[in-house]
Image 1 (cartoon, rainbow, N blue to C red):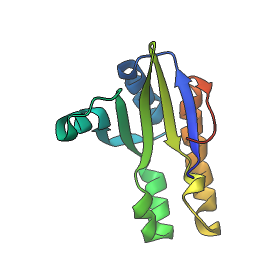
Image 2 (cartoon, rainbow, N blue to C red):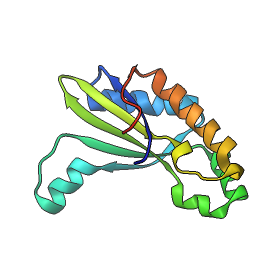
Image 3 (cartoon, helix red, strand yellow):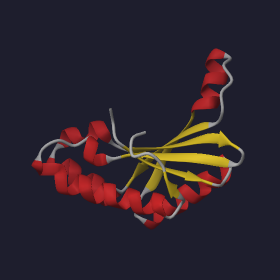
Amino acid sequence: MVRGLVREVGQPIAEADASVRRELATEGFGVLTTIDVAATLREKLGVERPPLLILGACNPQLAHRALETDPSASLLLPCNVVLEALGGGRTRVSAVDPRSLFEGDALATLAQEASDRLARALDRLGAPGPETA
């Protein structure tokens, strides 16, 4: 199972999306992609589900260092940050913990730095949730 950094915020998903993007930017991450899972499932399968967004976040400096160390790190870029509507104006925000993705000593320090930056961004959003997404 992939470890995640999880927080719950007292904001509906649209507001949480703006807050997440702002806090990620504070830590040097930009959002390269946005996948609206609920809209895609509605369009492709006719399935209705609560709002769920996947943001592809990337810190260019960290990405560059990872690729310089091991080009196969590109398989793990960008970092996924997931926003899931919980109802009642609450949103769960989860980010993949890079420490769970990178094996070996060569990328351990870099994975720790990325994890620390993501955790700080999420910490500014709200109360911690379970460590595993």
